[in-house]
Image (cartoon, rainbow, N blue to C red; front, top):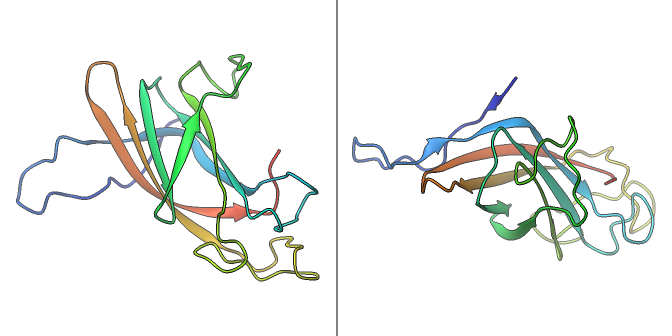
Length: 149
């Protein structure tokens, strides 16, 4: 079942902007990047996974207004969960602002440990570009998870 998400920016002039509403296969997953240890925010990194309903030629994403370079993971093998090549994308944002910026979290233990007891949400804007030169876009409010992978 596809997940339909709110579209980005309406034109405001009473006519369509030519951008379709993006359908996602699953909600995006946003988690604190696991470079050193699980639940550590010292590296100030978040990772994002996005599942599309159809393959895309190009893809742009922002998290809290900051651009994220998305890619198809190295060694990607299509699976029923991940979907076909170019329909599953991953990216990361570093620095993410986990300590003092837009994605600021309130540590649960010490200065750099966050278990998610104090939830943080981020606005993720997604645009997918297709070979037929059409595009689809969405804005999603995503919960930041305490871990990735």
